[in-house]
Image: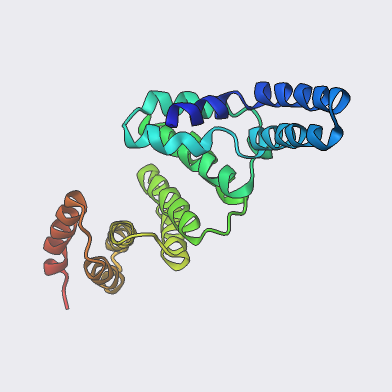
Length: 217
């Protein structure tokens, strides 16, 4: 089933040409009452090619851990500005994730900003994009920008406990660097209350606890 879906997604324009030709053939040889249907399918195929693209089949590749295959699919999108807004946001988010994996933080940051500029109404997307922008700024050493993005991320809403804990831990760390002990305790408490499940985040939480115990007052 997936193979058929992939074939259709990768060959929408070719299918549109065939359907258009079939529509004209039926219209001239039989009746236009039959010819309009393949023509409609042709129009829908063209619209889907430019407004949806191949992004909808990305999930399968990601679940199978086929990063190279997923990146090849992203490269097939030639006109990302024509994508439907939620699809465009997902496209730039995926590109940003791959850029982050390749340690190209500047490219990841630019792609995340484009995703936000697409104007997706999905609050989880906005929060996640802001969290990633905050994390990138943190890694670059730009603590002021990191703090602003991370605060906006938790205000926008994040999709799960691990994301919330990550944002609050980074906020607590920034406050520690500023010697804002009250703020660091506040954000540490928020991170702990999020009850993350990811082992790495839990380990970071336990490590932060050691610092919290040394804070006066």
